[in-house]
Length: 174
Image 1 (cartoon, rainbow, N blue to C red):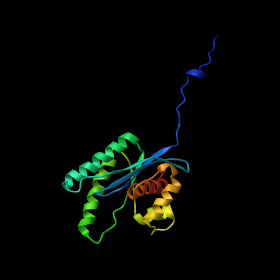
Image 2: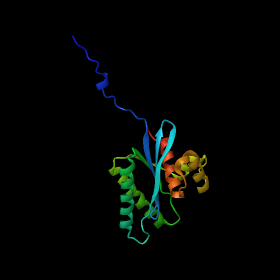
Image 3: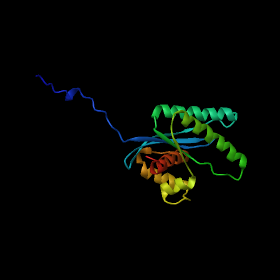
Image 4: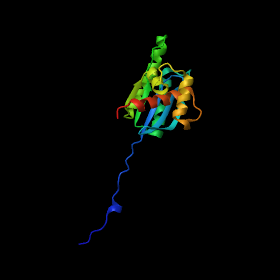
């Protein structure tokens, strides 16, 4: 009886523990986004950017720009999960409502791509990154550069989005 070694024909699936996370810092004038990849406890910068609807556009057009911008990012970077900053209540209730509309449009877009969305309060994000819940924007930006040294020069909104993604990496359900 002839037995052939079939090991060269067996295709073994490549298992990857890498997970891509998109973090979103919502805003009507500037929405920051950042994508990181985690492998175990290791963090890797993938990309970040801003989505900037025109201020003089109708609300519906601005929300559409946010949604379309996030769709482009999702298609290009293919994250497995997402996180977004919770709305904090401003002194001006109209501002809070408008920010809530932006968050709603962004969360819906993420859900349409079958992504589970973690929501984090600003103080939890700051505590996760800097160690205290009342960190300044400068402290946050500095720590993001320490944690993700290949991110280069980034805006405050991009740093916040990356911080949201990192916070989700710390707290997400595996």
